[in-house]
Image (cartoon, rainbow, N blue to C red; front, side):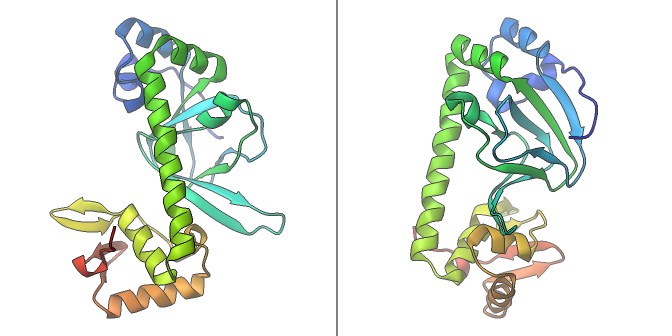
Length: 225
């Protein structure tokens, strides 16, 4: 990672959802062990197979969690944004990193070493529960993705991804962050060419509308639960 680690104020920590329930005294202690670092677009934060040493929390920017094979074929497992954290699984089960994480935008990250993270979990039930909820959420997302790959065609998988990535803006669902077709392909297990064809068909069918880099989703794209 690029950038020089700096100290963190309790104000910054209090704004992080993971630390929102930590008592003031413990938060002041955390401020002495948590570091803040800026990373550039394209920087590698962690590599699959590395030993686990820290938990990371995203203050700003976006990162992709990915796996690749010996031939360089990549699969994007998820895209993470502000308020989310990663790296906790290896801290809990002492296993090597299961995936690589790369910055797709300039990012501001917090990191906390394994020893300090484990102490926080032992001392703060609410923080431990927040980590558990994060793990359960990712397990549910993985189950949903497996179900999509098995049960939906490429059109359905693209629609599901767009819905999952969308935010509600002025009553409309929109994917406001840049989402390259190549990344969509790596997230749903399809070729870029197939994704381009599906996106064009969705536009022609009135399911989505392109406004620059923003994708507006129309109600007709909604999938049954």
